[in-house]
Length: 227
Length: 227
DNA sequence: CGCGAGGATTGATCGCCGTCAATGCCGCCG
DNA sequence: CGGCGGCATTGACGGCGATCAATCCTCGCG
Image 1: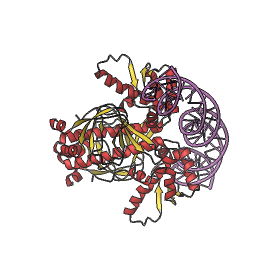
Image 2: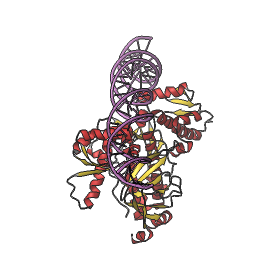
Image 3: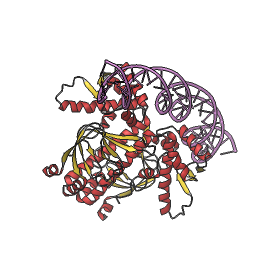
Image 4: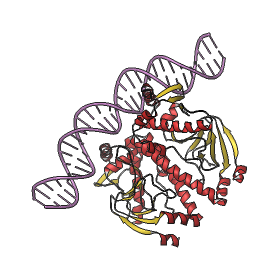
Protein backbone atom coordinates (compact mmCIF):
# COMPACT_ATOMS: atom_id res chain seq x y z
CA UNK A 1 0.00 0.00 0.00
CA UNK A 2 2.81 2.34 0.84
CA UNK A 3 4.36 1.38 -2.46
CA UNK A 4 1.16 2.38 -4.22
CA UNK A 5 1.46 5.73 -2.50
CA UNK A 6 5.00 6.17 -3.79
CA UNK A 7 3.92 5.49 -7.36
CA UNK A 8 0.96 7.84 -7.33
CA UNK A 9 0.93 11.60 -7.27
CA UNK A 10 -1.70 14.29 -6.98
CA UNK A 11 -2.60 16.32 -10.04
CA UNK A 12 -4.98 19.24 -10.43
CA UNK A 13 -7.16 19.93 -13.46
CA UNK A 14 -9.17 23.07 -14.16
CA UNK A 15 -12.82 22.82 -15.09
CA UNK A 16 -13.16 21.85 -18.74
CA UNK A 17 -9.70 20.33 -19.09
CA UNK A 18 -9.54 16.95 -20.81
CA UNK A 19 -7.80 14.35 -18.67
CA UNK A 20 -7.88 11.45 -21.13
CA UNK A 21 -9.20 11.87 -24.67
CA UNK A 22 -11.32 9.29 -26.43
CA UNK A 23 -9.11 6.99 -28.48
CA UNK A 24 -6.05 8.28 -26.70
CA UNK A 25 -3.22 6.29 -25.28
CA UNK A 26 -4.77 6.34 -21.78
CA UNK A 27 -1.40 6.52 -20.04
CA UNK A 28 -2.78 7.21 -16.58
CA UNK A 29 -5.38 5.81 -14.24
CA UNK A 30 -6.30 6.74 -10.69
CA UNK A 31 -9.18 8.00 -8.65
CA UNK A 32 -11.00 11.24 -7.98
CA UNK A 33 -10.07 13.08 -4.78
CA UNK A 34 -12.18 16.22 -5.09
CA UNK A 35 -14.52 17.52 -7.78
CA UNK A 36 -16.47 15.73 -10.49
CA UNK A 37 -15.20 14.09 -13.68
CA UNK A 38 -17.36 13.65 -16.78
CA UNK A 39 -17.13 10.38 -18.67
CA UNK A 40 -18.11 11.26 -22.22
CA UNK A 41 -18.31 9.89 -25.71
CA UNK A 42 -18.38 11.83 -28.96
CA UNK A 43 -21.11 10.88 -31.41
CA UNK A 44 -20.66 11.18 -35.15
CA UNK A 45 -22.85 14.28 -35.14
CA UNK A 46 -20.16 15.88 -33.00
CA UNK A 47 -22.08 16.44 -29.79
CA UNK A 48 -20.84 14.75 -26.67
CA UNK A 49 -22.93 12.27 -24.77
CA UNK A 50 -22.47 11.91 -21.04
CA UNK A 51 -21.82 8.26 -20.19
CA UNK A 52 -21.25 8.73 -16.49
CA UNK A 53 -20.22 11.06 -13.71
CA UNK A 54 -17.34 10.21 -11.39
CA UNK A 55 -17.35 11.51 -7.83
CA UNK A 56 -14.63 11.51 -5.17
CA UNK A 57 -13.33 8.00 -4.49
CA UNK A 58 -14.41 6.77 -7.92
CA UNK A 59 -11.85 5.08 -10.09
CA UNK A 60 -11.08 6.58 -13.50
CA UNK A 61 -9.14 5.43 -16.53
CA UNK A 62 -8.98 2.09 -18.23
CA UNK A 63 -6.52 -0.53 -17.06
CA UNK A 64 -5.30 -3.19 -19.46
CA UNK A 65 -6.27 -1.39 -22.64
CA UNK A 66 -4.13 0.69 -24.95
CA UNK A 67 -6.76 3.23 -25.86
CA UNK A 68 -9.73 4.52 -23.94
CA UNK A 69 -13.10 4.36 -25.67
CA UNK A 70 -14.30 7.36 -23.70
CA UNK A 71 -13.03 10.79 -22.76
CA UNK A 72 -12.46 11.83 -19.19
CA UNK A 73 -12.99 15.53 -18.65
CA UNK A 74 -12.97 17.73 -15.56
CA UNK A 75 -16.59 18.82 -14.96
CA UNK A 76 -15.42 21.05 -12.13
CA UNK A 77 -11.99 21.89 -10.86
CA UNK A 78 -10.70 18.52 -9.71
CA UNK A 79 -7.77 16.94 -8.00
CA UNK A 80 -6.89 13.41 -8.98
CA UNK A 81 -4.66 10.76 -7.50
CA UNK A 82 -2.86 9.60 -10.65
CA UNK A 83 -0.74 6.57 -11.40
CA UNK A 84 1.01 5.65 -14.60
CA UNK A 85 -1.09 2.94 -16.17
CA UNK A 86 1.80 0.60 -16.90
CA UNK A 87 3.08 0.97 -13.37
CA UNK A 88 -0.38 0.30 -12.00
CA UNK A 89 -0.73 -2.83 -14.08
CA UNK A 90 2.60 -4.26 -13.02
CA UNK A 91 1.72 -3.34 -9.46
CA UNK A 92 -1.46 -5.37 -9.77
CA UNK A 93 0.48 -8.35 -11.04
CA UNK A 94 2.65 -8.27 -7.93
CA UNK A 95 -0.22 -7.78 -5.49
CA UNK A 96 -3.06 -10.16 -6.38
CA UNK A 97 -5.12 -9.06 -3.37
CA UNK A 98 -5.38 -5.57 -4.81
CA UNK A 99 -6.23 -7.00 -8.19
CA UNK A 100 -8.97 -9.00 -6.53
CA UNK A 101 -10.38 -5.80 -5.05
CA UNK A 102 -10.29 -4.20 -8.47
CA UNK A 103 -12.20 -7.14 -9.91
CA UNK A 104 -14.89 -6.79 -7.27
CA UNK A 105 -15.13 -3.07 -7.94
CA UNK A 106 -15.52 -3.57 -11.66
CA UNK A 107 -18.16 -6.27 -11.16
CA UNK A 108 -20.16 -3.89 -8.98
CA UNK A 109 -19.71 -1.13 -11.53
CA UNK A 110 -21.06 -3.40 -14.22
CA UNK A 111 -24.15 -4.20 -12.16
CA UNK A 112 -24.74 -0.53 -11.37
CA UNK A 113 -24.32 0.45 -15.02
CA UNK A 114 -26.81 -2.21 -16.09
CA UNK A 115 -29.30 -1.00 -13.49
CA UNK A 116 -28.84 2.54 -14.75
CA UNK A 117 -29.26 1.48 -18.36
CA UNK A 118 -32.44 -0.44 -17.57
CA UNK A 119 -33.78 2.56 -15.71
CA UNK A 120 -33.05 5.15 -18.38
CA UNK A 121 -34.47 3.10 -21.23
CA UNK A 122 -37.75 2.25 -19.53
CA UNK A 123 -38.81 5.39 -17.70
CA UNK A 124 -40.21 8.81 -18.48
CA UNK A 125 -38.12 11.95 -18.32
CA UNK A 126 -39.57 12.98 -14.98
CA UNK A 127 -38.77 9.58 -13.48
CA UNK A 128 -35.17 9.72 -14.68
CA UNK A 129 -34.76 13.21 -13.28
CA UNK A 130 -36.21 12.18 -9.92
CA UNK A 131 -33.86 9.18 -9.76
CA UNK A 132 -30.90 11.39 -10.59
CA UNK A 133 -31.80 13.89 -7.89
CA UNK A 134 -32.31 11.09 -5.41
CA UNK A 135 -28.85 9.70 -6.13
CA UNK A 136 -27.33 13.16 -5.85
CA UNK A 137 -29.03 13.70 -2.50
CA UNK A 138 -27.43 10.49 -1.21
CA UNK A 139 -24.04 11.32 -2.68
CA UNK A 140 -23.94 14.78 -1.24
CA UNK A 141 -25.30 13.58 2.07
CA UNK A 142 -22.25 11.35 2.32
CA UNK A 143 -19.73 14.03 1.44
CA UNK A 144 -21.35 16.61 3.67
CA UNK A 145 -21.25 14.24 6.64
CA UNK A 146 -17.51 13.92 6.49
CA UNK A 147 -17.45 17.68 6.22
CA UNK A 148 -18.77 17.75 9.76
CA UNK A 149 -21.90 19.68 8.82
CA UNK A 150 -25.09 18.79 10.65
CA UNK A 151 -27.12 17.45 7.76
CA UNK A 152 -30.59 18.08 9.14
CA UNK A 153 -31.32 19.76 5.84
CA UNK A 154 -30.52 17.61 2.84
CA UNK A 155 -28.85 19.60 0.10
CA UNK A 156 -28.82 18.52 -3.53
CA UNK A 157 -25.88 20.11 -5.32
CA UNK A 158 -25.91 19.86 -9.09
CA UNK A 159 -22.31 19.06 -9.99
CA UNK A 160 -22.44 20.24 -13.61
CA UNK A 161 -24.44 22.54 -15.84
CA UNK A 162 -27.96 21.84 -17.08
CA UNK A 163 -26.75 20.96 -20.55
CA UNK A 164 -24.59 18.10 -19.25
CA UNK A 165 -27.25 16.80 -16.89
CA UNK A 166 -29.77 16.79 -19.71
CA UNK A 167 -27.35 14.86 -21.94
CA UNK A 168 -26.72 12.37 -19.13
CA UNK A 169 -30.44 11.79 -18.71
CA UNK A 170 -31.13 11.63 -22.42
CA UNK A 171 -33.23 14.77 -22.61
CA UNK A 172 -32.85 18.50 -23.26
CA UNK A 173 -32.10 21.44 -20.93
CA UNK A 174 -35.61 22.81 -21.56
CA UNK A 175 -37.44 19.66 -20.53
CA UNK A 176 -35.09 19.24 -17.57
CA UNK A 177 -35.82 22.76 -16.40
CA UNK A 178 -39.59 22.31 -16.76
CA UNK A 179 -39.58 19.15 -14.67
CA UNK A 180 -37.39 20.69 -11.98
CA UNK A 181 -39.77 23.64 -11.75
CA UNK A 182 -42.65 21.18 -11.42
CA UNK A 183 -40.91 19.59 -8.44
CA UNK A 184 -40.36 23.05 -6.98
CA UNK A 185 -44.05 23.93 -7.39
CA UNK A 186 -44.95 20.68 -5.63
CA UNK A 187 -42.67 21.63 -2.71
CA UNK A 188 -40.53 18.52 -3.17
CA UNK A 189 -37.39 20.63 -3.51
CA UNK A 190 -36.59 24.27 -2.91
CA UNK A 191 -33.99 26.27 -4.84
CA UNK A 192 -31.10 27.60 -2.78
CA UNK A 193 -29.07 29.04 -5.62
CA UNK A 194 -28.68 28.29 -9.29
CA UNK A 195 -26.97 24.97 -8.73
CA UNK A 196 -28.27 23.65 -5.45
CA UNK A 197 -31.61 22.73 -3.94
CA UNK A 198 -32.88 21.69 -0.56
CA UNK A 199 -34.73 18.38 -0.44
CA UNK A 200 -38.00 19.09 1.37
CA UNK A 201 -39.98 15.90 0.71
CA UNK A 202 -37.86 12.78 0.28
CA UNK A 203 -40.90 10.49 0.04
CA UNK A 204 -42.40 12.74 -2.60
CA UNK A 205 -39.22 12.50 -4.63
CA UNK A 206 -39.28 8.71 -4.45
CA UNK A 207 -42.90 8.76 -5.60
CA UNK A 208 -41.84 10.55 -8.77
CA UNK A 209 -39.27 7.85 -9.56
CA UNK A 210 -41.73 4.93 -9.73
CA UNK A 211 -38.97 2.81 -8.23
CA UNK A 212 -38.63 1.18 -4.85
CA UNK A 213 -36.13 2.65 -2.42
CA UNK A 214 -34.20 -0.61 -2.56
CA UNK A 215 -33.72 -0.45 -6.29
CA UNK A 216 -32.71 3.18 -6.04
CA UNK A 217 -30.06 2.44 -3.49
CA UNK A 218 -28.70 -0.34 -5.69
CA UNK A 219 -27.85 2.33 -8.22
CA UNK A 220 -25.91 4.53 -5.87
CA UNK A 221 -22.62 3.24 -7.14
CA UNK A 222 -19.86 1.34 -5.51
CA UNK A 223 -18.18 1.86 -2.22
CA UNK A 224 -14.62 3.03 -2.33
CA UNK A 225 -12.28 0.07 -2.39
CA UNK A 226 -8.94 1.03 -3.86
CA UNK A 227 -6.81 3.28 -1.63
CA UNK B 1 -7.95 -26.06 -17.77
CA UNK B 2 -8.67 -29.74 -17.56
CA UNK B 3 -9.56 -29.22 -13.95
CA UNK B 4 -12.03 -26.59 -14.97
CA UNK B 5 -13.54 -29.17 -17.30
CA UNK B 6 -13.91 -31.64 -14.45
CA UNK B 7 -15.71 -29.12 -12.28
CA UNK B 8 -18.14 -28.03 -14.95
CA UNK B 9 -21.06 -29.91 -16.40
CA UNK B 10 -23.56 -29.35 -19.16
CA UNK B 11 -27.13 -28.53 -18.27
CA UNK B 12 -30.16 -28.00 -20.49
CA UNK B 13 -32.97 -25.53 -19.88
CA UNK B 14 -36.26 -25.29 -21.75
CA UNK B 15 -37.41 -21.96 -23.14
CA UNK B 16 -38.89 -19.84 -20.38
CA UNK B 17 -37.16 -21.60 -17.50
CA UNK B 18 -35.52 -19.39 -14.92
CA UNK B 19 -31.85 -20.22 -14.43
CA UNK B 20 -31.08 -17.78 -11.65
CA UNK B 21 -33.77 -15.61 -10.08
CA UNK B 22 -33.29 -11.99 -9.08
CA UNK B 23 -32.24 -11.76 -5.44
CA UNK B 24 -31.50 -15.45 -5.39
CA UNK B 25 -28.50 -17.22 -3.99
CA UNK B 26 -26.74 -17.29 -7.40
CA UNK B 27 -25.15 -20.69 -6.75
CA UNK B 28 -23.94 -21.31 -10.28
CA UNK B 29 -22.06 -19.47 -12.98
CA UNK B 30 -20.88 -20.56 -16.40
CA UNK B 31 -21.30 -19.73 -20.03
CA UNK B 32 -23.81 -20.20 -22.80
CA UNK B 33 -23.17 -23.08 -25.21
CA UNK B 34 -26.24 -22.89 -27.42
CA UNK B 35 -29.35 -20.72 -27.36
CA UNK B 36 -29.99 -17.27 -25.93
CA UNK B 37 -30.32 -16.23 -22.29
CA UNK B 38 -32.28 -13.16 -21.19
CA UNK B 39 -30.82 -10.96 -18.47
CA UNK B 40 -33.82 -9.31 -16.85
CA UNK B 41 -34.87 -7.12 -13.97
CA UNK B 42 -38.30 -6.81 -12.43
CA UNK B 43 -39.61 -3.29 -11.98
CA UNK B 44 -41.96 -2.33 -9.19
CA UNK B 45 -44.83 -2.22 -11.64
CA UNK B 46 -44.22 -5.94 -12.13
CA UNK B 47 -43.18 -6.00 -15.76
CA UNK B 48 -39.75 -7.28 -16.61
CA UNK B 49 -37.15 -5.12 -18.26
CA UNK B 50 -34.57 -6.70 -20.51
CA UNK B 51 -31.10 -5.68 -19.37
CA UNK B 52 -29.14 -7.77 -21.85
CA UNK B 53 -29.09 -10.80 -24.09
CA UNK B 54 -26.43 -13.48 -23.72
CA UNK B 55 -25.34 -15.47 -26.76
CA UNK B 56 -23.16 -18.59 -27.05
CA UNK B 57 -19.72 -18.08 -25.44
CA UNK B 58 -21.06 -15.32 -23.19
CA UNK B 59 -20.47 -15.65 -19.49
CA UNK B 60 -23.47 -15.72 -17.15
CA UNK B 61 -23.94 -15.49 -13.41
CA UNK B 62 -22.33 -13.28 -10.85
CA UNK B 63 -19.07 -14.31 -9.27
CA UNK B 64 -18.16 -13.00 -5.83
CA UNK B 65 -21.65 -11.96 -4.82
CA UNK B 66 -24.14 -13.78 -2.70
CA UNK B 67 -27.24 -12.68 -4.53
CA UNK B 68 -27.75 -11.76 -8.14
CA UNK B 69 -29.38 -8.41 -8.83
CA UNK B 70 -30.84 -9.74 -12.08
CA UNK B 71 -32.68 -12.81 -13.28
CA UNK B 72 -31.22 -15.13 -15.88
CA UNK B 73 -33.90 -16.80 -17.97
CA UNK B 74 -33.79 -19.09 -21.00
CA UNK B 75 -35.06 -17.05 -23.96
CA UNK B 76 -34.85 -20.15 -26.15
CA UNK B 77 -34.01 -23.74 -25.32
CA UNK B 78 -30.44 -23.46 -24.10
CA UNK B 79 -27.54 -25.60 -23.02
CA UNK B 80 -25.20 -24.12 -20.47
CA UNK B 81 -21.78 -25.08 -19.20
CA UNK B 82 -22.33 -24.69 -15.47
CA UNK B 83 -19.94 -24.53 -12.53
CA UNK B 84 -20.77 -24.22 -8.89
CA UNK B 85 -20.06 -20.62 -8.01
CA UNK B 86 -18.03 -21.39 -4.89
CA UNK B 87 -15.93 -23.93 -6.78
CA UNK B 88 -15.37 -21.42 -9.55
CA UNK B 89 -14.25 -18.77 -7.11
CA UNK B 90 -11.80 -21.02 -5.36
CA UNK B 91 -10.59 -22.16 -8.74
CA UNK B 92 -9.89 -18.55 -9.67
CA UNK B 93 -7.90 -18.08 -6.51
CA UNK B 94 -5.64 -20.98 -7.45
CA UNK B 95 -5.20 -19.92 -11.08
CA UNK B 96 -4.52 -16.18 -11.22
CA UNK B 97 -4.04 -16.28 -14.99
CA UNK B 98 -7.67 -17.28 -15.43
CA UNK B 99 -8.75 -14.62 -13.00
CA UNK B 100 -6.81 -12.12 -15.03
CA UNK B 101 -8.72 -13.18 -18.12
CA UNK B 102 -11.97 -12.76 -16.23
CA UNK B 103 -10.96 -9.26 -15.21
CA UNK B 104 -10.25 -8.34 -18.83
CA UNK B 105 -13.58 -9.78 -19.90
CA UNK B 106 -15.49 -7.82 -17.28
CA UNK B 107 -13.67 -4.61 -18.17
CA UNK B 108 -14.66 -5.06 -21.80
CA UNK B 109 -18.22 -5.85 -20.75
CA UNK B 110 -18.34 -2.63 -18.77
CA UNK B 111 -17.18 -0.61 -21.77
CA UNK B 112 -19.69 -2.31 -24.05
CA UNK B 113 -22.51 -1.75 -21.57
CA UNK B 114 -21.62 1.93 -21.27
CA UNK B 115 -21.58 2.28 -25.04
CA UNK B 116 -24.96 0.61 -25.20
CA UNK B 117 -26.38 2.82 -22.48
CA UNK B 118 -25.12 5.95 -24.19
CA UNK B 119 -26.62 4.78 -27.44
CA UNK B 120 -30.04 3.94 -26.07
CA UNK B 121 -30.43 7.15 -24.10
CA UNK B 122 -29.48 9.50 -26.92
CA UNK B 123 -31.05 8.05 -30.04
CA UNK B 124 -34.47 7.75 -31.60
CA UNK B 125 -36.34 4.47 -31.65
CA UNK B 126 -35.49 3.82 -35.29
CA UNK B 127 -31.80 4.34 -34.59
CA UNK B 128 -31.85 1.91 -31.69
CA UNK B 129 -33.64 -0.70 -33.77
CA UNK B 130 -31.17 -0.29 -36.62
CA UNK B 131 -28.23 -0.68 -34.23
CA UNK B 132 -29.80 -3.79 -32.73
CA UNK B 133 -30.36 -5.37 -36.14
CA UNK B 134 -26.81 -4.49 -37.15
CA UNK B 135 -25.42 -6.22 -34.08
CA UNK B 136 -27.60 -9.25 -34.70
CA UNK B 137 -26.41 -9.46 -38.28
CA UNK B 138 -22.82 -9.57 -37.08
CA UNK B 139 -23.59 -12.07 -34.33
CA UNK B 140 -25.37 -14.46 -36.63
CA UNK B 141 -22.76 -14.01 -39.33
CA UNK B 142 -20.23 -15.33 -36.85
CA UNK B 143 -22.23 -18.32 -35.82
CA UNK B 144 -23.19 -19.19 -39.36
CA UNK B 145 -19.57 -19.14 -40.44
CA UNK B 146 -18.61 -21.84 -38.01
CA UNK B 147 -21.64 -23.70 -39.26
CA UNK B 148 -19.85 -24.01 -42.58
CA UNK B 149 -22.61 -22.24 -44.48
CA UNK B 150 -21.52 -19.94 -47.26
CA UNK B 151 -22.80 -16.63 -45.91
CA UNK B 152 -23.26 -14.80 -49.17
CA UNK B 153 -26.69 -13.83 -47.88
CA UNK B 154 -26.63 -12.24 -44.44
CA UNK B 155 -29.45 -13.53 -42.26
CA UNK B 156 -30.74 -11.63 -39.24
CA UNK B 157 -32.41 -14.06 -36.84
CA UNK B 158 -34.44 -12.49 -34.05
CA UNK B 159 -33.57 -14.57 -31.00
CA UNK B 160 -36.66 -13.69 -28.93
CA UNK B 161 -40.21 -12.45 -29.39
CA UNK B 162 -41.14 -8.89 -30.30
CA UNK B 163 -42.24 -8.08 -26.78
CA UNK B 164 -38.80 -8.81 -25.36
CA UNK B 165 -36.97 -7.00 -28.13
CA UNK B 166 -39.16 -3.97 -27.59
CA UNK B 167 -38.45 -4.04 -23.86
CA UNK B 168 -34.73 -4.34 -24.54
CA UNK B 169 -34.81 -1.30 -26.82
CA UNK B 170 -37.02 0.72 -24.52
CA UNK B 171 -40.04 0.85 -26.80
CA UNK B 172 -43.25 -1.07 -27.53
CA UNK B 173 -43.99 -4.00 -29.86
CA UNK B 174 -46.19 -1.72 -31.98
CA UNK B 175 -43.53 0.90 -32.60
CA UNK B 176 -40.96 -1.82 -33.18
CA UNK B 177 -43.16 -3.45 -35.77
CA UNK B 178 -43.81 -0.17 -37.56
CA UNK B 179 -40.13 0.63 -37.85
CA UNK B 180 -39.27 -2.86 -39.06
CA UNK B 181 -41.92 -2.56 -41.75
CA UNK B 182 -40.45 0.80 -42.74
CA UNK B 183 -37.09 -0.87 -43.26
CA UNK B 184 -38.78 -3.59 -45.29
CA UNK B 185 -40.49 -1.00 -47.50
CA UNK B 186 -37.12 0.68 -48.04
CA UNK B 187 -35.64 -2.66 -49.15
CA UNK B 188 -33.04 -2.62 -46.38
CA UNK B 189 -34.21 -6.00 -45.09
CA UNK B 190 -36.52 -8.68 -46.45
CA UNK B 191 -38.66 -10.97 -44.28
CA UNK B 192 -37.86 -14.67 -44.57
CA UNK B 193 -40.23 -15.91 -41.89
CA UNK B 194 -41.74 -14.47 -38.74
CA UNK B 195 -38.43 -14.36 -36.87
CA UNK B 196 -35.74 -13.91 -39.51
CA UNK B 197 -34.87 -11.41 -42.19
CA UNK B 198 -32.31 -11.16 -44.94
CA UNK B 199 -30.08 -8.10 -44.89
CA UNK B 200 -30.25 -6.58 -48.37
CA UNK B 201 -28.58 -3.20 -47.84
CA UNK B 202 -25.96 -3.13 -45.11
CA UNK B 203 -24.97 0.47 -45.84
CA UNK B 204 -28.60 1.52 -45.69
CA UNK B 205 -28.93 -0.08 -42.29
CA UNK B 206 -25.88 1.78 -41.01
CA UNK B 207 -27.38 5.02 -42.33
CA UNK B 208 -30.40 4.51 -40.12
CA UNK B 209 -28.22 4.13 -37.03
CA UNK B 210 -26.57 7.57 -37.25
CA UNK B 211 -23.46 5.90 -35.89
CA UNK B 212 -20.11 5.16 -37.49
CA UNK B 213 -19.30 1.56 -38.30
CA UNK B 214 -16.41 1.74 -35.84
CA UNK B 215 -18.66 2.69 -32.96
CA UNK B 216 -21.12 -0.01 -33.91
CA UNK B 217 -18.46 -2.66 -33.89
CA UNK B 218 -17.30 -1.50 -30.48
CA UNK B 219 -20.71 -2.54 -29.19
CA UNK B 220 -20.60 -6.05 -30.56
CA UNK B 221 -19.62 -7.46 -27.21
CA UNK B 222 -16.58 -9.26 -26.04
CA UNK B 223 -14.65 -12.05 -27.61
CA UNK B 224 -14.92 -15.40 -25.84
CA UNK B 225 -12.14 -15.67 -23.32
CA UNK B 226 -13.06 -18.17 -20.65
CA UNK B 227 -13.11 -21.76 -21.86
C1' DC C 1 -22.16 51.58 -14.00
C1' DG C 2 -23.41 49.77 -18.62
C1' DC C 3 -22.65 46.22 -21.63
C1' DG C 4 -22.41 41.70 -23.59
C1' DA C 5 -22.18 36.68 -23.30
C1' DG C 6 -23.59 32.41 -21.58
C1' DG C 7 -26.75 29.85 -19.12
C1' DA C 8 -31.48 29.04 -17.17
C1' DT C 9 -36.24 29.57 -17.60
C1' DT C 10 -40.68 30.11 -19.99
C1' DG C 11 -43.72 29.97 -24.03
C1' DA C 12 -45.64 28.08 -28.53
C1' DT C 13 -45.79 24.57 -31.84
C1' DC C 14 -45.26 20.08 -33.95
C1' DG C 15 -44.09 15.35 -34.59
C1' DC C 16 -42.90 10.99 -32.78
C1' DC C 17 -44.36 7.34 -30.16
C1' DG C 18 -47.21 5.18 -26.43
C1' DT C 19 -51.90 3.64 -25.80
C1' DC C 20 -56.05 1.45 -27.05
C1' DA C 21 -58.44 -1.18 -30.39
C1' DA C 22 -59.17 -4.12 -34.46
C1' DT C 23 -57.51 -7.35 -37.74
C1' DG C 24 -54.65 -11.02 -39.58
C1' DC C 25 -51.80 -15.05 -38.97
C1' DC C 26 -50.24 -19.43 -37.23
C1' DG C 27 -50.04 -23.46 -34.18
C1' DC C 28 -52.35 -26.24 -30.84
C1' DC C 29 -55.90 -29.14 -29.22
C1' DG C 30 -60.28 -31.05 -29.01
C1' DC D 1 -61.82 -29.70 -39.55
C1' DG D 2 -63.17 -25.84 -36.61
C1' DG D 3 -62.38 -23.13 -32.76
C1' DC D 4 -59.21 -20.79 -29.91
C1' DG D 5 -55.29 -18.39 -27.90
C1' DG D 6 -51.02 -16.10 -28.49
C1' DC D 7 -48.31 -13.15 -31.27
C1' DA D 8 -47.51 -9.79 -35.05
C1' DT D 9 -49.28 -6.17 -37.64
C1' DT D 10 -52.08 -2.08 -38.81
C1' DG D 11 -55.01 1.90 -37.67
C1' DA D 12 -56.66 6.08 -34.89
C1' DC D 13 -55.78 9.21 -31.44
C1' DG D 14 -53.71 11.86 -27.71
C1' DG D 15 -49.87 13.39 -24.91
C1' DC D 16 -45.13 13.94 -23.80
C1' DG D 17 -41.16 15.99 -25.04
C1' DA D 18 -37.98 18.05 -28.79
C1' DT D 19 -37.43 22.20 -31.29
C1' DC D 20 -37.41 26.98 -32.09
C1' DA D 21 -37.63 31.39 -30.05
C1' DA D 22 -37.96 34.99 -26.54
C1' DT D 23 -36.95 36.63 -21.96
C1' DC D 24 -34.57 36.81 -17.65
C1' DC D 25 -30.62 36.36 -14.68
C1' DT D 26 -25.83 36.26 -13.44
C1' DC D 27 -21.32 37.10 -14.03
C1' DG D 28 -17.16 39.18 -15.92
C1' DC D 29 -15.18 43.13 -18.05
C1' DG D 30 -14.29 47.60 -19.87
